[in-house]
Length: 82
Image 1 (cartoon, rainbow, N blue to C red):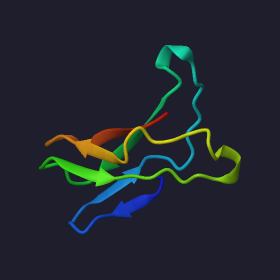
Image 2: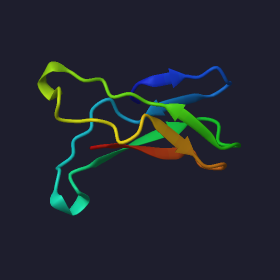
Image 3: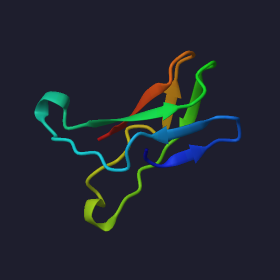
Image 4: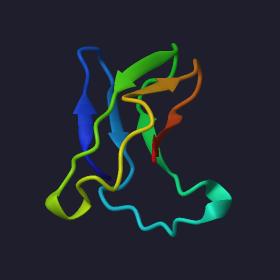
C-alpha cells in the first residue's frame, strides 16, 4: 500500500502504490492516471491530493486537478498527472 491520508471522518484515503511505473505515449495524451482508493464508500466525497515534487522531476509533472472525487458506492477514483 502507498501513502495513507487520514481525513477528519472515520475512513482513510490512500494511493495504492508509492511508485508507479508507466510508459507515456501520445495515445494517452502523455498523462498518467493514478488510482486512489478509500475505505468507506457509502457517500460521495472529494479529497485534496498533492504531487510531491522532487528535484529530478521538478517542472515535468503536475496534477490536472488538486481534488479527487469519489461517487457514492465507489471505492476508486483517479488523480491525473499531466
